[in-house]
Structure formats: C-alpha cells, structure tokens
Amino acid sequence: MISVTQQLPRAFRGLRALVVGDAMLDSYIRGASHRICQEAPVPIVDVQQRFDMPGGAGNCAANLAAMEAKTALLTVLGDDWEGRELRRLLKAAGVEIGRTPIPPMRRTLAKVRILSDEQMVVRFDQGSTAVIGGEAEQSLLWRLDALYPNADAVIVSDYGYGVVTPAVVERLAALQAQYGKILVVDSKRLGNYRGVAMTACKPNYREAVQLLGATGAPNNGQRCNWLIERGASILQLTGARIAAVTLDGEGAVVFQDGHEPYRTFARAVPSHRAAGAGDTFLCVIALALAAGASAPMAAECASAAAALAVSKEYTATCTLEELIRRGDGQREPDERWENLPRIIQEHRENNRRIVLTNGCFDILHRGHVAYLEEARRLGDVLIVGVNTDASIRRLKGKGRPINQLSDRIEVLSALSSVDHVVAMDDDTPHRLIQAVRPDVFVKGGDYTRDTLPEAELVERLGGAIKILPFVDRQSTTGIIQRIRRCQPAQAKQRPKHRTSHVISMENSTPRALRQA
Image (cartoon, rainbow, N blue to C red):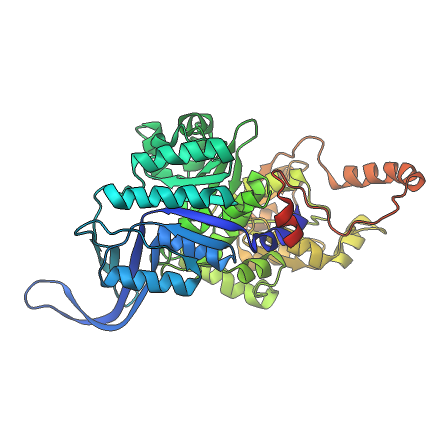
C-alpha cells in the first residue's frame, strides 16, 4: 500500500484531463471592521485586500493543472470583466480554454465574499444561470467530440448553472459508450447521469440525501453509518461503478460494487477555508483512477490533496509537489514530544474529542487499518503512540522490529484515519496518557478493562476506555510466521532479476506507469 501512496502522484504528470462544467470567478474582499453603519445596524468593512481565483469548474481545471496534468476546460463565459479576469487566471494556471461563442447578454458567474477580520459577513452571487443553447451549445459539443477521445480523465463539474445541458449529457453518454474513459461526475443532479456509465460520482452528504429522497437523515456523527447502510442504493441510482460521498470535516465514504465501504478521514479546518475542497478531491480521485489506482487508494490520495488545499486560505489548489512531499513523509515534524502540548491545546480550544491508542505497528496489515479507522470514529482526532525500536526489542525480543521507527511512522502517517503519530520509548503509555489526557483511550481485543494497567490513570484523568475487537486471522506475529515458512521454498526459486518497487494497479495505464 505505501509504495502506491508514495508513487501514485508521480503518475499524474502528463495525463490529459478534460473538464466540462460551470466555471466561475471566486472573489474575496478582506478588511477590518471598527464601526457600525449609521444607515443600518451593519458593520462597516474597511477594504484592505482583494483576491480573485478560479471557482467551480474553473477551480477543478486549476487543480488538475497544479497536478501537472495537461488540462482543457469546456465552459461558457460572458464578455465582461469577470470573464476576462477568469480567462487570465486560467491561462496563468496552465489551463487551455478555447473560445466559445457568447450567448447574448450572458454574464460570467461570480461569487464575491466579504470578510471582516477573517469572518465572512456576506456573499454576493451574480451571473447568468440560464441554459445555453444555439451556437454556444453546438460549439461546446464540437469541442467535446474533439477532445474526449484523447483524454485520460474526464471530469464533469455541474452546478446546474446552464452549461451542462441535456444535449451535453446525451453526448457524454455516447462518447463514453464509444471510448470508455475515466469519467467522474460532480453534480447536484446526479440522477440525470444514470445512463452515462460514469466511472465515479462525488456527491456531498446533502446531495446524497437528496438523491436518495430520504427524510430524517442525521446531521451529526451518525452520518457515516447512515450512509453505509445506503451505499448500494447510491450506486444503483447513479449507475456509477464508484461513489465517493464527501462529509466535509468527517472525510468521505467510498462505495464500490462488490467491495466493502471504505472510509477516509479529514482534519477539521475553519469553515471559511473549506471552499473548493470538494473540487480538489474530485480532480485527484479522477487522476488517481486514470493512473490505475484502486478506489480506496484513489480516495486516500484525494483526501490528502483536499487536506493540503484547505490548509490554505480561500479557494486554493494543491500542487503535485506538495502531494508528493506529503506521500514521501516530508511534512513538518510537529509531532515530537516538545510540540505535543501545543497540539493538544489547539485541539482542546476547538472542542475536539481526542482519541489515543498505542502499539508497535511493526508490519501494518488490514487488521491495523480497520482498528485505527474504528478508533478514529470515536472522536475528532486520533493520536497514535508508536513504540521506538529499542522499546520493541525490550517487549518483543531479538529480531524485532521488522521495520524501523521512521518507516513505521511514515506508514501510519499516510493513513487518513491518523492525525498525529508520537514516538514513545517507554514500555507503558502512562507518560503519553498524562501528556494527552485523552477523552477516549483505545486498545485491541486481547485486553479487558480489568487487565489494562493504564485504565485507572485514563479514568482518573477524565477519559473513557474502549476495547475494540481484532479482525480475524490478522496479526503481525502470524504474518512473520507465514513469511518464515515460505523462505525455504523461495530460496530454491530465486528470481533472476530483482524488482525495486511493486505497485498494485486496478486499471493499468502503461503510459502513466512509465512516467511514474
């Protein structure tokens, strides 16, 4: 798994991506408020800065270009300042955007946000949302016919603002039937794409509820479990092979016919920074699938990119180099012991429920992944204490660990369920528990509350103990024993050539692999 995580983004370089949809200009006007208006009880914002950037399908195209994919955008803009500025920004980002005839009186879509001391005060939406037709629609269809056959990934970003007409959807269905591309759709009207044979769809939670026609859907921590019970219905209603339902700060749930649901996790960020996170997720999951990744790996990669995007201000993109550095473990080392108090304080100030677990995690296997995902569901933040090499030797004896500490930390950090990893040299987690003071302390199924030495300390500090069951027939010791049993047979049949990397791909694209 980790080889794919590290190598996958490198396969994005040079992929050909085509975006179809509603592009808009996202504007942020930032200032400070020290007075109340005399005409009405509203704050006066003294404007200090203005930022303009591509939004909607334009943000999708900018994200794809930032991933170093060769990107073309099919949209319709107005002949106005907003349209000209959006064209300039897209061209600067490296996006190809051809000229489409402009319908009479067509105005470019724009969303203008006013922020006072980083608090959004109001948002103004403007632009034409009528369905395009005539020469503009015909021109868009011609360009779609020309670009579709050579695309590695096609992304539809349909906000219902008039660009993706019924004729465009019909043409997409015909082209997909002929060429069978990686086609990923984000639309508020996913039911309209039932016959398009899309590879994947990306509704958010509200759109999934609307698609299901459900009433009484939860709007709290039960959203994930509620969705999991209805994953098959989402696939059936959309006709997609894969459905990735995004849950804002709770990550995403990925459904695929014939597979168990897969959960990714996200880190909480201030809400005014969340604009465009869905676009980043959409684009990266499309590129990952085009590069041959499995649905879970594509979703993990997309979640990592979205997390990087929302760590920035406003409608931002994630670059390929940023994603590669994250996959290579080159993140800021903020999880050292001396930084732990600051990390804990930040989470406490944001009223986040902290979950703590610890272990060796020597050879990460499916049981570990399931265990950590279940632990993360018990709160907002999961901190993992991982034993150092010396402490594992004291606990497990000579010959362990199999993987050194830096490798184990890198693998754990690659999981979206894990927020922080802290190395611990002690033989017990008591010092870590005192430092973190977790709301929930989690251990595996070989313990009970009465046999857990640290249970009293956790409860004295106000935390709760949770024992999670193990996945059947999954253990590090068992894996090591199976490897050792295989060694004599492998010695007799040594390969003539040694392979440096093995990457498991579901939809192989040789060109992308060569580039990786």
